[in-house]
Image (cartoon, rainbow over all chains, first blue to last red; front, top):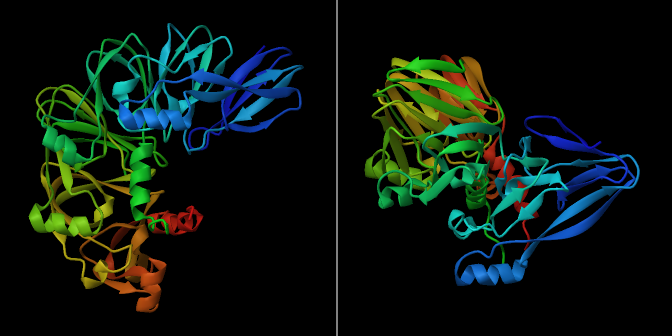
Length: 227
Length: 227
């Protein structure tokens, strides 16, 4: 019987997945820390949404129309350890009618779950960023990682979140992508990116820190590349 | 340093200390808080938001030179509302209550303050224009809650006599201390290494320091960049 345990919470979390004979689990490409000899990894392709505009089309041509995940299959009882690239937490979510996950937060899921990287709402979320949203459907558990701490919010009514802080949300929530505050000028200068205005009832996962903001800040202090 | 408290028109809590701290504010009715632009994680309905230039033109110029955010976002509750703020770097948030007194802080450490507090930019001396860890100083005074952030864990030290602190580790200090910004080593080593500015404190008073240094992170990453 497949068993998930999350170790070293919250700053340096790592997930251990135990698999019985013949069981499999999907994990993000590059996330494997270690595995027992019984577990083999096979790459799987998942179709992803094309990002918007000409630049987006070129980008997706370069990066491919697909993203890769690994299927961990155990021919006897075995286990695999997976960890995200960034420091932060891992959370397990049991699917109840689907979940929309920000691609950078996806760490793994049960093999019975179908992943759709061509989710319709994907385009409006991250203009010009390599992130996309994917729709997980089916029965089982999803593992997600966060940059920083992860918060589970059960929304009932309107709530506004910076898109850089979204980990995942249930499709029972409706949303619109909008600007921060009341004026476009303020939104532009404030350094806040786009925000998602959620409404309805459902679960939303947020992360305490913004990976893009972190990259921008540290990147701005780095010396220029000596071309 | 406390983790939660009550201010005028709001209550606040610092969640997920110390690694991934988020300041959570629950506004009752007419509270008001302003924050460094770009720190917003989420908010609910019931807030009016305004983004403005910080400290007027000259203050903004100083902040521009120090690569700090030029803008602040002001949140004013019109009905009960929630707000979440996180600093860019992973780490701690310190609550500094002011009762008509003054606190000085590194410009990069400012996260948020309640309405009763005014912030002004202090000229950090000509040395702050050189080197990447230049120090721009803010002076916070008034009555209310001040929130400072630090990369890593924030701890309090008491100065009796004199103490020298690396600018990259400095968060805040009491104005009873006199300070002098100094180079370590020669001008040449300061400019080449991108570090080496320290603050020499003397007198009696408390300082807040953080356990990690952004400049050190940058110095460490830089050689790993592709050519």
